[in-house]
Length: 156
Image 1 (cartoon, helix red, strand yellow):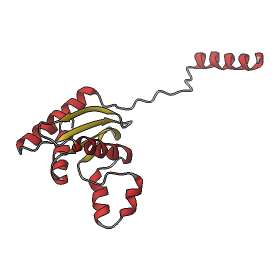
Image 2 (cartoon, one colour):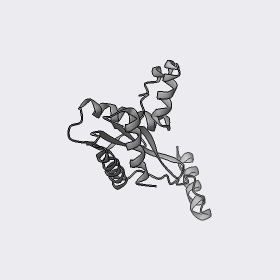
Image 3 (spheres, helix red, strand yellow):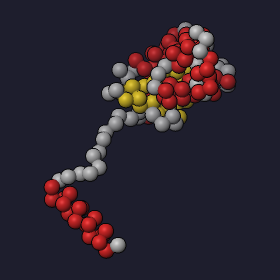
Image 4 (cartoon, helix red, strand yellow):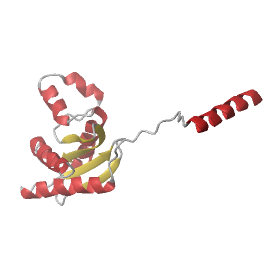
């Protein structure tokens, strides 16, 4: 035990002297609350243009809810759907529209993955990293996708 302690101590002194850092800090961009609010504000503004009532869910890179907005008059079932769309987008790093098209083409086996194959979920990217996702539900899947895209445009 003493020998291990001496070796570890020697390595630490060597690291301090040489400037060697065995644990290199890696910076990865993150989704801030301010970003989530900008995205949801822009998405809501786009929905209001056509009088579409929707739920907008914003998740971080770990799939945790950062912001949720349910516009007046939106069915409560859309809360779950919006979150599931966002969850699919962040977990698989791609838009849910891809899964919808795949299922329409007959590839129903992907449903076993637990995806929500309905347009309206999109990953949020920054510097080549997925930092979160947006999920929108309440109108048609195409309209949900339009709203989600408008939200993403707010932070480009």
